[in-house]
Length: 389
Ligand SMILES: *Cc1c(COP(=O)(O)O)cnc(C)c1O
Image (cartoon, rainbow, N blue to C red; front, side, top):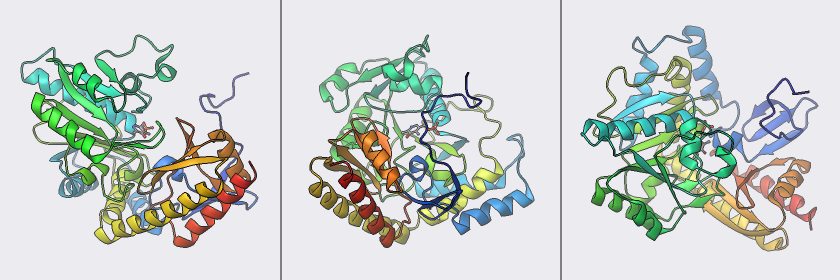
């Protein structure tokens, strides 16, 4: 008999009733160190007092009005994002995949309005992940995601990750945009080198193509800059954001330059819940903390500490682990043992990591994790690895 919850996830037998900082607690009081943070969502850990206040204050005042009216919290968050980034304008969504939908629509409308109606192709990369909506699965294009769900939304051209020749060959007069994650998350924590991102920007400029960055997982301070592309010095035309921006409250956004967004006039797009007062009040509180220079300096310091400790961990378990990769607090350990076995051994040692493709386990801790908790993470992962060898 089908479970009452549609069984699209194979879930671990864990269930939490409370969270505080980097820790999650089960009903019987057992505590787990959370190095997944809800897949890079809880950037400030669980039950951050500033976020709890922002949410409860707003909850006591006003939950919802439609986008037919002005929403001051939405305006405030849009202003913060515009001030802090390349973007001139922002549309709010409730998830990453909805941000993908708009990014695709925006790129196509841009060329339509320029009289280039056939310019609809969007180039994407193997191993990418852009969510589970119709455009999201078509964009990623992997067999696992699209099989059985045809007809798949057309117009996506898939190129092997890091295959520069294939990329240049894929470009033609109908190329509207290139869409890429600066650091692949689900694909196994694969950072795109800064020179490659610069090269992509140059290629886009040369051919007049829009560059869409999917920073749903790698954005919002995760790599030690507010957004990951800042490391390379380039800017995109359109950027997808979600996960960390709500600190655990469902919130996403599409950021764009004035030019890239020029086709999106009144009536061309909408969302009932997108940009609601609750989500945006929390988003403002997240941005105030995460966009601060001293906060990001601390993220970089802690990321360096975590990485150094992980390198040591990997070196002492050569039969279980292979190497560490990633950027900032978005780290992956390529495993020799099956990554799912490593994650399960972690559960037994009360530490939570997240599996990814390419036999990697992902470590995406809260950005404000303490040095003590980093030490605790290493000793628990050490015990987990020891139990496997
Ligand atoms: C998680 C993720 C998405 C999808 O976000 P949802 O909120 O699950 O729809 C899209 N792109 C990337 C890079 C992601 O990591």
